[in-house]
Length: 290
Length: 298
Image (cartoon, rainbow over all chains, first blue to last red):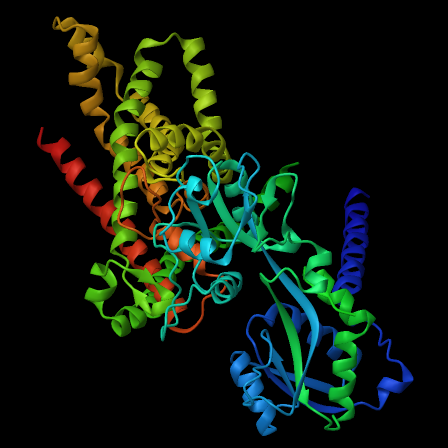
């Protein structure tokens, strides 16, 4: 009797576990709209590596909703993304910088869909409230070593940075001008305290009264650390939106001006800037642009 | 009743065989995984070392993946220094604790303390990292400020955390090996007129030497392989080791840059893994042969 009972309970257990597994990993029902059902084909895109996380999330969602559409995304940097859009290799190029206005990138339209703000952060005990580009550059190259040189207390600066190959690090270096001429490396001092992720930056800066770090603005917890003004402008969603806070970058979709996109490519571009796309952008800790 | 015993006897033979096979498979699984891991480490780490150049890789002083410079000498020296300091401090301390627990303390006190030590051994490393970041790093900040250095995580903080982490390992292994020494050693030594301390140092500890060495080897292995706790307190700058400056250890070198690395950079991280692997192997073999042989000669 006991044995049959335990076998029965085992069977029940298996069925329940199986059902849960199917519910979790089984194929979800298609919620295709009728107007999407006609879409098919391959959309060739490529460019910036900085948009990797959000773009993969966008493509994943878009392809899930449009099973017959494949969106390619070659990661080769904004420059190649723009160049290959001009040549027609890509229908849509990804760029994390603005188009150059020197004529070399004419005939393209860059549509921003997300803003990635980078905040300079210090400990709450720090009395410094603002830095200029020049000061940030000097701090990160080791020229300025003491907070008193930038209007703070007499204390040595602890430079906190991200690890090599971090996207935030390279964007920060690019915007502030920390890139060495003709070299891929940044000029950030070698003895800078290095953190492996945004959370570690926040923790390190909140525990070290003399530290300065940089991190994605959307992750700043201002109850623990203080974001600094950069060239006189405090980072906020408003200053990010109106463009006065310049330690930021926008993510763009680049297309040929006036050219007719394929229906699938047009649908993808609309999706990225549409309500669903904005949700994904926001979920990836960026500020969506309406 | 009789029937059931007979039946049990019959079913025993196949059961024996099945269990034999089961144990064999388990035994082989351990061996096979060691072989596979070694193979994998060599196959994935060696090409990068060859590409970069063994000398540039092992003796290069600059780790800068952005500039394609992959010198891990600072990482190697930081690991060696941090582990070395931790062992130098922890081994004598752990031995003293072990002697106290086994020879000096009363039974009740000893078992209570031993329980606490074993509890210490079971604490996850990230908790040690947290404690280090909250308690030890700020203490080192004061020393750094006094000496005119910027406040930061440091090699010293990492070493201190490692000391605390490896103490319980060494203590508990030493305690069991001292316990295993026959009582007569101590008794005879005492009967021959030596004091309590003399017989502990001259008779009991030498007899327990091989067990103590195993404890040290385990401790060193734990120290050199520790990642999380160290990453939280060491500051992680890839520069030559100085006690009060940030330092990046081999383990941290891998885990820190793993997420976004690609191409030769990622291969170089595998190369670090191979170096770390070789390190632990060499340390284990060296320590156990040298120390154990030294004991045998005496």
